[in-house]
Amino acid sequence: MAVTGRVMAAVGGQEFLAAWLRAAEEHSHGKSAAPPEPDRWTNYTPKFFSAGEFAMLQAYCEILIPTDETPGAREAQVAHYIDFVVNAAVPEAPEMQKQWRTAMTWLAGEKFGELPAAGKLALVKQMATPERDRAVKHDGYVTYRLIKQMTVFAFYTSRAGLVENLQYQGNAYLTEFPACNHPEHRRV
Image 1 (cartoon, rainbow, N blue to C red):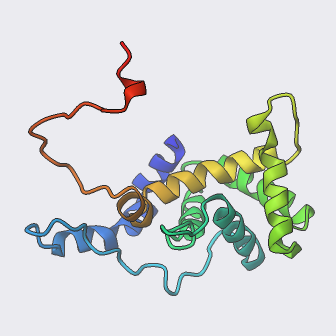
Image 2 (image 1 turned 90 degrees about the vertical axis):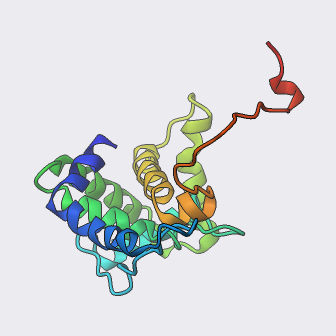
C-alpha cells in the first residue's frame, strides 16, 4: 500500500481528496457525526480501465465485499477508487498499471464478465483456494490477491467502510479503558 500512499500524495491524489476536505471544513464541529461523503462519483468515467474491464472489476469487488445489512464495495465506490489510483500511478508507479493490465487480461481470458453471478462467485472461490490451502495452486491467485488487497484498502478507507461499517467516530478522549469481560480472554 506504499504505492497507494505515493499516488495519493501526487497531484491526482490532491484532486481526489479535495472534495472530502471541503466537506470536512464545512462540517460543524459541534456535531458528533462525520462530514457527509462528497458526491464525486456520480458522473465518473473510468480513466484507466475500459468499460468492460471496469464492469468486471466492479462485479469482482462486490463479490469480495457484498452488500448486506451494511454497505458493501458498491456503496463504497471501490471500483471507482481503484480506477482513479491505478490511472494516477503513471508517474510514481508504472509497474502498478502493468499488474492491473495483466489481472484484467487474465479475468477476460476466463470470460469473467460473461459468467452468470453464480459462475463469477465460483471462479473467485477457486482463485482464493491457495489462501486457505497452501498446497493448492491456481493460475488466478495473483489476480485474486491484487484485487482483494486494493478492494479491502479502498473499502475500509471509505466512509461506507470506516464510518458506516466499522462505526468509527473519530478520535475520542477516553477517561478509562474497560477490560474485556469475555471469559476466554481472562487467561493470563
